Image (cartoon, rainbow, N blue to C red; front, side, top):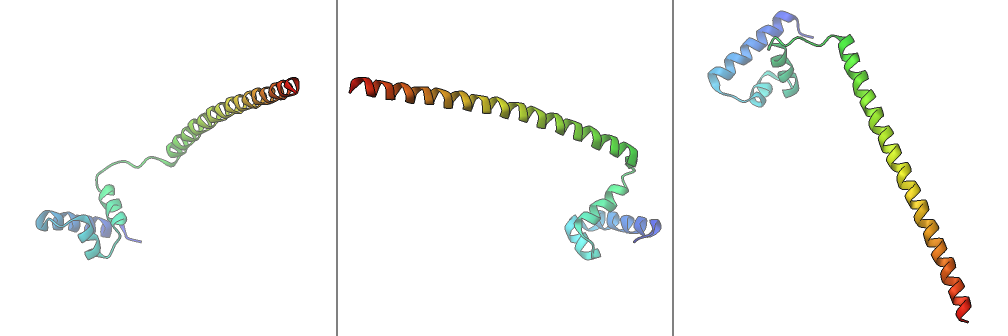
Length: 108
């Protein structure tokens, strides 16, 4: 695990190298022996973007889950309606078959 100072030093070094050499993030990550994801995390941390507190993250996650539940409930209602339509079609087919058999018997 890197200390804050070593991370800041790496970030400064990476920025200097990008500015001076024009290397891509992938090239720099390979050179420093870190993954590109880690490089992006380092650069992201340096953008002075405040991290969302854990409590806020949980609130956001709860809201996402509530929306997901609503979507699932809507799908369930749609599937139930589809199921009813299928039963209606089956009943119509059965009636048609019965009617056809009655006509067949009548014509004999």
